[in-house]
Image 1 (spheres, rainbow, N blue to C red):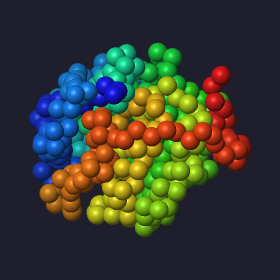
Image 2 (image 1 turned 180 degrees about the horizontal axis):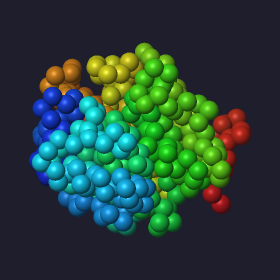
Image 3 (image 1 turned 120 degrees about the horizontal axis):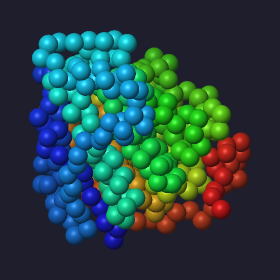
Image 4 (image 1 turned 180 degrees about the vertical axis):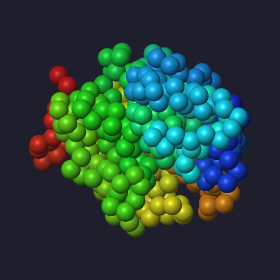
Length: 350
């Protein structure tokens, strides 16, 4: 059995976006308690690892020096601050004490997850507090300050790894797309609710990359009320063949659960059935992977929480990939020729 790990620090719960903000950090503690109650952290191949904040140098692999400086400045202030040029201080991205420390710790957790896979041979690792895919090079957005996925993937690229990034959050992974739009070393795929009238207003099918990265950005914008059959078909006919043919060294997957039909801010109608199905398909590729937590609002105020989502064996598989609860399947023997037409990302390595 492959070694698996959960990366998390109790220090996350020391910070707060504010009592009235929809993103409540105590959800991490609740999720951790639930994983413990199911015994998922006691499995023979399972380990729990702590994490450290990323360094300034690692942050600057994506973010600009000016943005980093302002983030640090605001983080130490005892007074309310705002700089809308950098997306700081609005309703989505409030400024609070220790903001930089919190964001750097979140990025550090995801980088540690990638390190465990790349250097210690783990098969699957979950960064529970990761998935900040709206963080832009010089702007906070959508609750996100530092883009942990881009920072961690850049670390992998520096070590010669080939990476596929899969985003299952209901919102387009616009920050990650920005980070690798002209890079052919990273295949980015995002399934999300269409941005026609939905945040962040990007992620359309004609956004396919630029320069040498042309064809390595794939977006599947889904209409409101898309349900499990359509979602799984999109994965089977587009995502899975691309991942298999790109043949990355590591898959980084953002598994935000705000696609669920009970989420108050989205209009997709996905259930845990789709998530369990996709997790099994990813496992069947037999490629080491890192799972990043993502969107899902207050479980105590906005419909069923993680306890509902982990109600049975299939559902536990959807939310505990790093706990080794997924079944093993054999990948398909071949791919249909039409999947490769016109897409350089499908060029399998020699």
